[in-house]
Image: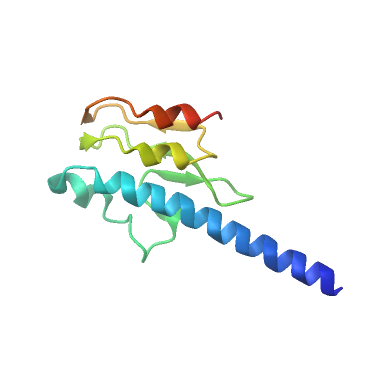
Length: 112
């Protein structure tokens, strides 16, 4: 019984750390959006649950970011390399925005 409790506690802590990793990646992404356009992403802060952020969809089981739908928000800036840390991401829509620069090579880390 004690081992089971320890396992559950460790599993929960791991999930919390992984969600924090997704949160940090998205906050870094937001920091690269031009300042005048950031209000569109105002829900992207530590007061809102990550899975309730505008354009963010999480998986049911692990609450990791699986979709990022920011199409048509007229954002500009650059695409942060941190996007490559969203290891559960299966869909990324950045259409109808004006991001400059190059696509970060870290996007290649997204194998899903």
